[in-house]
Structure formats: structure tokens, C-alpha cells
Length: 480
Image (cartoon, rainbow, N blue to C red):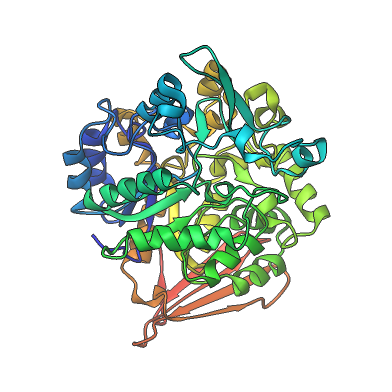
């Protein structure tokens, strides 16, 4: 199915019920009109990081179901799959073959060898310091070969995730075969996870390396040229980087919006939100919540450093059960620039504030994404957090079907579902249409969306201080 301009749900295969079959039932029963697409977080056999350490892409993890289950979902919803372009599991057949056969392995060039990457006498301390790292040490680990020798391989993320050498022919063949396989199984979009880390080059920080990053994206695009699959390069960094990606014609994420909206609701001020929305492209996906934490660095220079700090402090003050330690090393966090919380709890488990945030999200430029916990206005899961000591699990609750049946009855969830139905079925939200943003006062913002080819107009007026709003569609008031 081709990408549609309808709200996309982000979910694991086993978070709304136990598997893909349950997910299909839940979608059909509760969400089919509110949701147009589904981002299925990694569904492949994996050895860690909740699926982000895949061993292969040609199979579905049996605990989730089969490709037939995925393809059935794809008959009703446009689908997005993940492709981890930076790494592969060290328990993959390819890595195990490399360990066993060393230089005689046909996969010896699939993985980025740390020792071969550096010229003689390097890396120096300055080289290591220059690398854009997710760790407080050099990003490598030792590989022990069957013959008793050892070497080092590049390892940006968790211990399971070994970096690929995207320069080699064997890696490009792996990328091409994997992507084309995903396209055959119904992908409407493929999310390139951690793509900014994929290119490594001497004398750079090995992050978003230009022009090589564009050459890599061009290759990936070429592999999918005979399909309708769209690419979504994923990048958590200063907003100017995804804006560059946007100018190259790709869809991007608006990862700045979550913090900008929190600032706006906390302070009651509309100026920063309005200024950011005026800059935002239409060819993007808006988020308030994902499977990771709420990014802070994404909004740097959209908000001042003081505003970012004040927003973070306020989040820990007014957010429900949000503590600094949940985003620190005690709870195994790699990224100290993300805050672990559900969006509902970041707003103090307050129905009015939460609905207001979602209302502004759906009027923002782009296609709205909503994480499964956010779809049910979920609170922080402290039980799962403490059981696992994994900070991000505070926002990764497992819903049983019985629990979903109860949660959807809550008034805030019913209003949200009505809002999403309105967004999906209203021509005014045309991505080729016009958007007009005004700030009648320091506390107010109005957003007007209009269709390029018709007279359809949708307008929202919000007072962030009073937490009030009104919505009109073609001059008639809409209630949710």
C-alpha cells in the first residue's frame, strides 16, 4: 500500500496484545478509523535492544507471527519497517561466520574493522575525542576468532550491535537484498535507523559525514527505485541536520516539537511554537512520543539554552513520577540528552493539557505519528521500569487486550480517537495545501490549514495560558 496522509501508529508487535494476530484484532476493533498507518517497531529475530539488534531481515520473529500476519495488516494500513543501516547483531549468521573463518569468511568486509580503519599510529586521543560517541569510551569491542587470534570491530551502540562497513560490496549487497525483501512484504516506508552514524571517515567526527551521507542515501534510494517505498532517515540532533535531509527531498521527523510543545504549555506562551511551525516542512512526521525518550538536543536554538533548561526542570517538577535518575546511568541510558517519560505523564497526567498537545500536533505541518502508549494516554510504568532497570521501559508498557478494552473507555482517549478520525478524513490537511500561523497575543496561537484544490479549511484557536481551544471546519464548530 502506498503512503497515505493519515495518522501513523508506532507500536511493537507485542505491546497491544501478545503478537501480530492480537494487534490486528485490536486495530480492527478500536482504532481502524483513527489510524491509517502502522510503524511496526523491529519485528525480526533479534538479540537485544527490544529488536534493534537484528540477526536477519528475511524472517519475522516467531513469537510475533509470520509475514502473512504482517501482509494482512498491510491490506488495511500503510506500513513502516525499520532497517538498522548502521549495525547487525553479533549473533547473526554473518558475524558468526566471520568469527569462525576470519579472513577466509565471505563476510569479513561486512563489519567495520577498527584496526584496519585507522592508519598507522592511530587512533590518537584526539581521534577518539573527535568521534561523536554514545559511550564514554572508544566505540569498539574485541572479536575473538576461532583460530585463537583477535581483532577489534567498530561498536557504536550496545554490545550486541556491530557496525557495518557501508563502503564494501558485500555490505551494499546485504543492504540491497534486505531492503528489496522488505519492499516485497508490503513496506510503504522504511525507516533508516541511526543512519547518521553509518558513514565513518578519517579526520571527521563520524556522524552525518558529508558528502558521503548523501551518496549512501542515493544508493539506498536506487535500490528501491522500482517500488513505491518512501525512506525516512532517522536522526536525533540539532534541527538543522534533518532540515538538510528535507531539502534533499526525503521525509524527516520533527523531533523538536515534543519539547517545544512542553515549553509552550508549561509557560502559556505561543511565540516559540509559532516560530518553529512556520519553519517546518510539510513532508515530515510529527511526534510527541516514541519508543525512546523525549529528545532535548533536537530543540536547541529553537528554544534558548535557558528555555531548554527551564523546560527540563519544569518537566521534573510537574511531570507525574518523572525523576532525573530514570534518564541517567543508573537505568542504563546511552543518551543523556533524552528524558524518559510518557507524554501524558510529562503533562502531569492531565487530560486537558494532553488533549491540547495532541490537537496542536495534528494541526502542525506534516503527518502525525502517535506512539501506542500515547494513543491510550498512558501513564509512566514504574513497575516495568524497576523490574528491568531500563530507563526507556517507563514508556514501554505491555497492554493486554482486557486492559485495552478498559483504557479506550476513558474520556481523554475517546476524544483523542475522535480527533484522529477528524484529521484522517478532513481534506483541509492536504500536504500540498496552505498553512497560516498567527499569534493574536503572547498566550494564543491560531493555525489554519487549507486544501490546495478545494475550499476546505480547518482552523484551531488555542489559548495556552487558559488551556482553552476551539476548532472550526469550513466555518462550523467541531466538538470532539
